[in-house]
Length: 92
Image 1 (cartoon, rainbow, N blue to C red):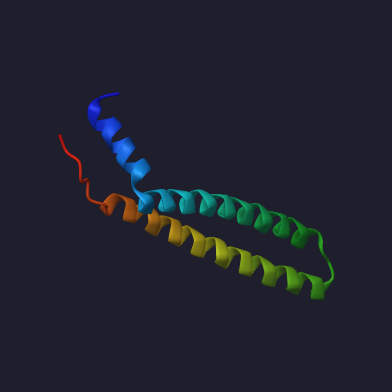
Image 2 (image 1 turned 135 degrees about the vertical axis):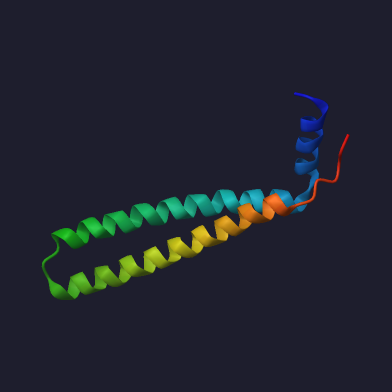
């Protein structure tokens, strides 16, 4: 590694805002993956269900999980965009 990359790594480690953002992105990715699995399992249950009342409940839950996942993806995209807009303070 060259000096520039080492300095960038050290700065990112010491920068509390960037650390918080990275941690938030990590957790958000985990939650999005869980929501995707949950949504798929609900769709599978919906395919096998014949009772109309239970089907309606499953459809509502699928819609809710999809909306949460979509909102999470939007936030994740915004966090990624914010990372690119950060100024680089150390230059050699």
